[in-house]
Image 1 (cartoon, rainbow, N blue to C red):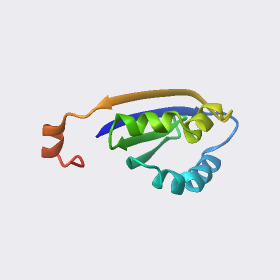
Image 2: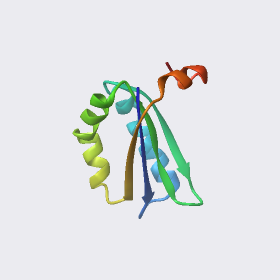
Image 3: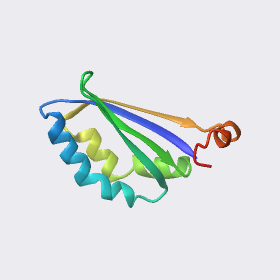
Image 4: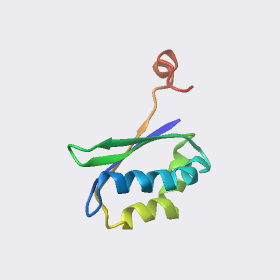
Length: 101
């Protein structure tokens, strides 16, 4: 498993518009090869939104980053200050804490 955390700020749209956008695009994420889960994030007070992605492996994450969905995120004028971080998973302690293994 490989974890990716993406955050951004909204510019020119409000929380309700973003939630509608997220609901519209959630089925496309659900169908994405190699994506085990996406947790959608929202902190209205800090104007910070994003997601935590659990990928089967780093190759699946890279395929997403090379694809249209990720390029659309980066090109979206309403989503600014995009940050992308990814992490290897420590398998043994993650199993103990029921982290999806």
